[in-house]
Amino acid sequence: MTETARSNPFRALLSTWPLLATAVTLSLLGILTMSHFDGTSSLAPRQLIWLGISVIVYIACSLVDMRFIRRPQIIVAGYVLAVVLLAGVMILGHTTMGAKSWFSFGFFAFQPADFAKLVIIALLAKYFSRRHMEMGNFTNIIVSGLYASAIILLILLQPDLGTAVIFMSVWLGLVLVSGIPLRHLAFVGLAALVLAAGLWSFGLKEHQRQRIMTFVNPAADIRGTGYNAYQATIATGSGQLWGKGIGYGTQSKLRFLPEYQTDFIFAAYAEEWGFAGIMLLFLLYGFLLFQLLSIARRSATNFDALFTLGVLILFLAHMGFHAGISLGLLPVTGTTIPFMSSGGSHVVIEFAALGIIASLAQQGRSVPRERAMQEYEG
Image (cartoon, rainbow, N blue to C red; front, side, top):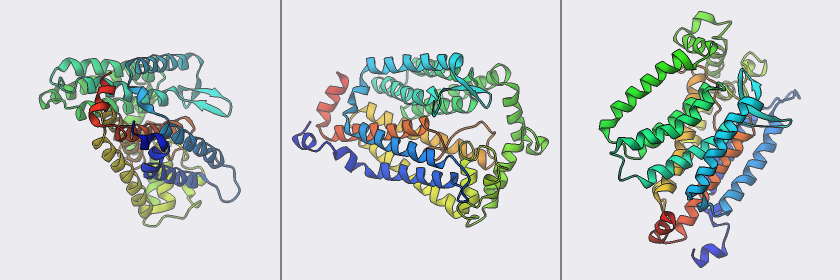
């Protein structure tokens, strides 16, 4: 490390401040959407506390030299811990909305799947970075798929279809950016169809199949399985151009729209901010993803680049599925949107991911690329 980097431990924080600023802005928009300005209780005050904790986590991760996460023993330990936690939550976890996905500790509820997202990104980044010249070997795709499948299967057993789809998207995205030959894409597509058929027949609960059928025919059961999707579509469209105003969303604040602070916060936001607010939101997310892409391009090692792209794919998948559900373009599966949805564990993990990226980016700039590659290979 250069003497300049040693003398200024805050360089990573200063050089990547737009990442933090954008994430905080998105979080504040979510908190505003949760807020009731008539004095009614909401999750906004608690989420503001989680935002403060998340910012501290980001700063800590960005100031620490996070290159140790490249080490195989660290990644393997994290993977084993994630599997143990996901298995344990099915025995000791708290059931919410029909899924056993959370460890409840009173004020704080921890979802192991959030931690597992960072672990699987690091594991796949390590695996593909060591084999980027061998991606023509289809064995690498199969082995990486098996690593991801172990976690995906545990999540499906909870059952949590939405989170499982997110993990599938991260694996597929990293396979694509790692340089998969075009001749293998057809096989991956066929495997996806076979997996989808297997999930439909053996992996999905009856209520999950009903949600998908409701997506095909939304008017079939508006008062039952189609209610959430119907109300989300109404809320999103009722905002029109300028929205109803912050705190004046009738569908959300009057509780016609369920889970408006978590699974349908995009619909609640669209109702209050309108089309103009949606464009602002997409600009913020676009700016965040552009920063991540720029950092990935300048990364000192293949691992750093793939880890950053993995986080980008994770955010993009969450955004796409969450917004698509609210717009009636996808079946209801229950997914959060990064930084905005209520919850502690997912927001802390998202800020931690950005802090790790900020640290890796700074450490990569503080040493020559040749030396960085030597440290990485070691």
